[in-house]
Length: 211
Ligand code: AP5
Ligand code: MG
Image (tube, rainbow, N blue to C red; front, top):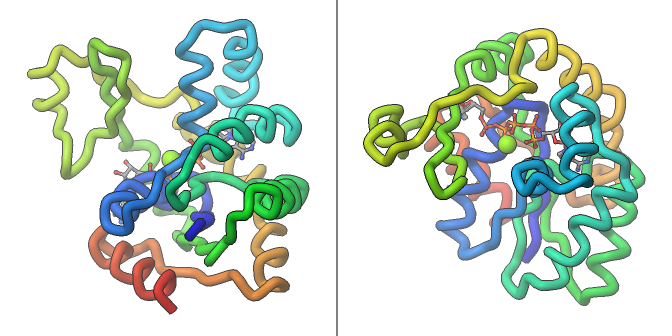
C-alpha cells in the first residue's frame, strides 16, 4: 500500500508520516529529507540542490525523479511519500514508476492548514543535528534537552525565515495545488484538517486511509 501525503509547507506532513510509518509498517520517504541528505554529503550535486531549496524553490522534476527512482525501486514495504509529487509532471512520473514496479497508490491525502498557522509553526520549528549527522525535529518526542544531552546542536532550517516561508507558500499554490485536482480526477484524493492536535490529525488520517 503506497500513500501520498500532501499539504503546504509546515502542514505537518513529516510529523504525521513518522507516526503512520510506525502504525502501518510503511516506509516514510520525505523528498525534502532526501535532498537535505544529498546537501549534507557535500557533493557537487548537493551544492546545486542547496542553492535551490534554501531559496524555497523546487528542484527540477528530472532531478527529483532521478534521485527518487532508486530509493523506491529498492523499497519492498509500502511507501508514504512526504512532499512528493509536487508538480503535475511529478504526479504523472510517479504513476508511471509505480506501474513499472507493480506498486499501487491507495490514497493521496492532503493535510489542510490556514496560512497564518503555517507561518507561526515554521517560525517556531527547531531541528537538532546529532554528532552522527542525524537530524531530529524538536517536538513532543524529542526535546531541546534531549538534543543537548546527546551532544547535538539546535538549528533552524534556512528556508524557515518568514520571507522564505511566504515564497514556499506561493510556490505551493502555483505548482503543487494543481496536483490536488489530478488526484481528485482519478478518485484517490482525500483531505484532513491539520489544525488539530497531532494525535487528532493522526486519527483523521488513519480513518481516510482505511476507507
Ligand atoms: P520539505 O522538507 O518537504 O518541506 P515542506 O513541504 O516545505 O514542508 P516542511 O517539511 O517544512 O513541513 P511539514 O509539512 O513536513 O511539517 P512538519 O511535520 O515538519 O521540502 C523542502 C524543500 O525541498 C522544498 O521547498 C523544495 O525546495 C525541495 N523539495 C522537496 N520535495 C520536492 C519535490 N518533490 N520536488 C521538487 N523539490 C522538492 O511540522 C511543521 C512544524 O509544526 C513542526 O515544528 C512540528 O513540530 C509542528 N507541528 C506539526 N503538526 C502539528 C500540530 N498538529 N499542532 C501543532 N504543531 C504541529
Ligand atoms: Mg517535512
